[in-house]
Amino acid sequence: MTDRDELAGWLRLLETPGVGRESARRLLLAFGSPQAVLAATTEARRAVVGPAQAAALAAPPDTFDALLARTRAWLAATDEVPRQVITLADPEYPPALLASPDPPLLLYAQGQATMLARDSIAIVGSRNPSRQGLDNARAFGAHLSQAGWVVVSGLALGIDGAAHEGGLEGGAGTIAVVGTGLDRVYPARHRDLAQRIVCNGLIVGEYALGTPPLPANFPRRNRIIAGLSRGTLVVEATLQSGSLVTARLAAEAGREVFAIPGSIHAPQSRGCHALIRQGAKLVETAQDVFDELGGSTAADRPRPVDVALNVADSQSEDPLLTAMGYDPIGLDALEARTGWSAAMLSVRLLELELDGRVARLPGQLFQRTGQA
Image (cartoon, rainbow, N blue to C red; front, side, top):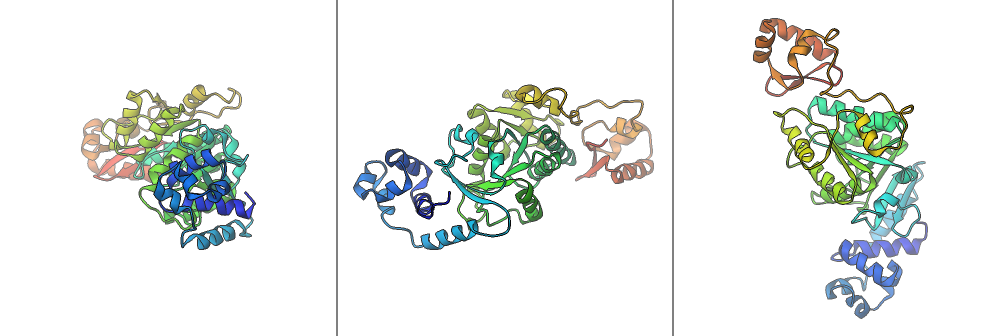
């Protein structure tokens, strides 16, 4: 969008307090454009929406001029990173999102906006994952990206961040959908990651510049993650995880839902197990995703991701790793399985931990990583 009056009209319509997405959508359907909505009489608008909403659009809110100036300055920034405001009326609006049940009326985009038209898959999960979960998210992201799939996630801590890292490694790139204004980075710990995504991928969001990280905005953000993607892969999730909301929205939009199973003892696995019971496709390798979605030939598909359920070659595997299995385990159980002393186990576990093959978990538990 380049027209100054058009930008002002969209911001007036969407950022006037009390109007909301649904009312804005009804007004656009009735009048055709934001400019026509604003040019209409209050009485004409009242025939479409409630009297309070119709009257609110009669004059700009007190903060509107500052918001418009801030948005124009953001668009005009000369940091060599493309910035756009994309509306439902723009040809650049992503087709997959347009076909979703509740597409945002406006998107702020920073980075390579052409990625919005490419095939993508969402990878989401817990903000407090296991080491295995992080490894799986990054590995799946990298392999899917190598095969040409853009990886979509929400820039949150945990699984989201690992998925973005994998997407950047694989070549196809990654899209981060955020729940704040694009002039903010949340969480702050992901500032460096966000900068790399801006330079080599894309960050998008529907919230006006200056919008802080409000809790209610993140569940709404999830519908964009699901809507942009042909499928959603849940790596780890508790039963209360917002990732299950994303999966539900994906299913409601007719998109595929995938879930990686885990230990029956791990709370982070229960959400994935619930999804599988509800019909999500159980995923052990990236090949499982390719088989369901298609889009690549056997010749150009990467080697499947090795995840925790794959069986290792027992002839070459460390005997302690064999004894550990794939669930979290404590020293007492390892002593019983191996017959080794606690001292011997501690030394070998430390070696494996330093090699990145074992992760130390809270509660004096240990678990194999994706490298083991």
